[in-house]
Image 1 (cartoon, rainbow, N blue to C red):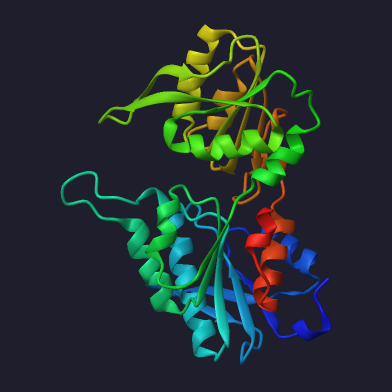
Image 2 (cartoon, rainbow, N blue to C red):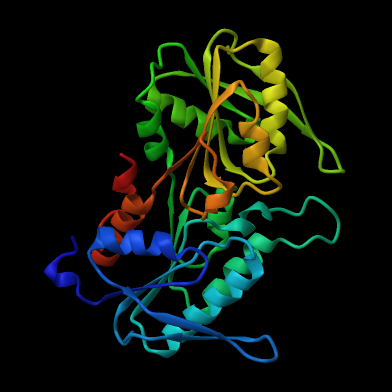
Length: 317
């Protein structure tokens, strides 16, 4: 519960994931303040924060999920509204920062969306950012304001500790995610392996080999996010050749576009798909194999620590 000295906190939510915001507020022991989003006849949005923000520590919760541009503009307007209402400090709480994928100039005349959106958020009024599992950690440096970057590996590890891990290997789909997979493997006290991935211009991926021991072992495929699931499906094809004993798939951000849950869960060798609730997964898309873990306690604790001026890095110990 929030302390007596912390009455000046004000938490608002955009329309992207109000269920998560409600859960975070329940963990904090504070009400979720109301906000209204209106659309004019010319399709422009207008936002009104319907609670006092003056000299308050304001937190605005909004993951950037589909429709991303709509939710981004909504967040920018909410930040601007809080700044105009004389908030003492404004924190943009983004459980999923989708533009983190646009982190480099890897083709001529291409935009770097991760940096541009970071600038927009700061210009709109964000004094601080709280994010969860950025696709590219260097995106942290795109912001000119402090960023607290959480991960969900503790929540995922707690889930998998219910199983016998004596013959388990955590497998990263590519070398880019190998550091996170290695950290996760250390939390579980198991081995780690990684796929060698090659990406083609037509958005195809090919995993040519798996570096590490997986034959006859229980495999946990770990990725930061699953969108269309192409990389995971390609890895499953390669793992089938190596004959692991069992396969489970885990990620932080379960975007699950293009029927990814159905395509991954349809593989008989996949026993379980585990993700967190950083993004909403519609009820009609969920299957028996899908397990959704809550990151609300971790986000709430981070918000409490930010508000009280305590160390957030202590959450990782």
